[in-house]
Length: 97
Image 1 (cartoon, helix red, strand yellow):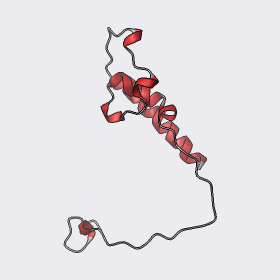
Image 2 (cartoon, helix red, strand yellow):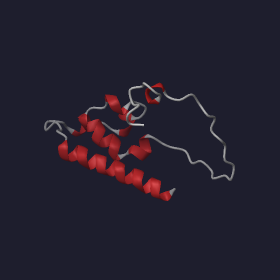
Image 3 (tube, helix red, strand yellow):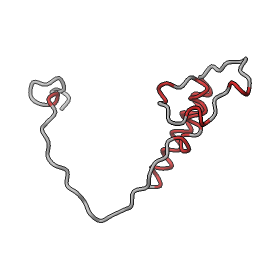
């Protein structure tokens, strides 16, 4: 469980670094023009501009809170569903399967 958390944090940090390295920010922006956490909270990352992306990914844990799930010994079986059409005989992915 801790390895997944470390991996998620490392992935977020790497993505933020890549955005900073590759991103182009406005050189004439003043401190008041820069977004803050309240301006991006509750909005979709797909609608963020470059400065909001940098801020949002750097503060991902504060913006996108998760929830902890307790560990249990109960295992629930998944129901068997219908096969996906693309993987059935004659489907688009038949050769890959």
